[in-house]
Structures are given as structure tokens and as C-alpha cells.
Length: 72
Image (cartoon, rainbow, N blue to C red):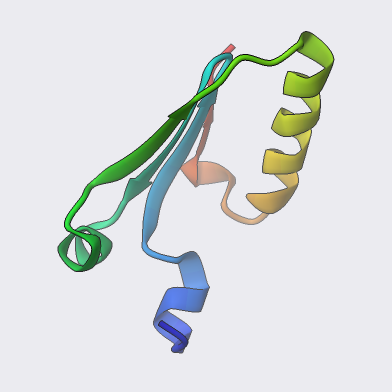
């Protein structure tokens, strides 16, 4: 998947980060390719580690803030 289409947004509709869960929801083209609509990871972090994760995710999503859901 090395063409310009995939480098634009990797087929991601949105990313959600909550206190104990990180979810990536895929767009319809990616769903057809991967045969799944989302990936979710659950975790447990200390407050300081969670804030670092949140900060890094905000940097990664710079320019795509409309696809980032941060749940407190």
C-alpha cells in the first residue's frame, strides 16, 4: 500500500482515545481491504503516562484534528 491514496490518511475515519481505550475506525475502502471496521486496544496507565500518550497522539494527528476524538 505504497501509493499516494494510502499515504494521505491511511484509510482512517477517526481515532478515539479514552482513559482506558484506543480505537482506530477505518473508512469503507479500508474495511473492504482488511475485512474489519476498527481496531481497539484497552490498557491501564498511570496519569502521567496517559498524558504523554495523549500528547503524542495529538502530535501524530496534527492536520487531522477533525478525526481525533479525545474523551476525558
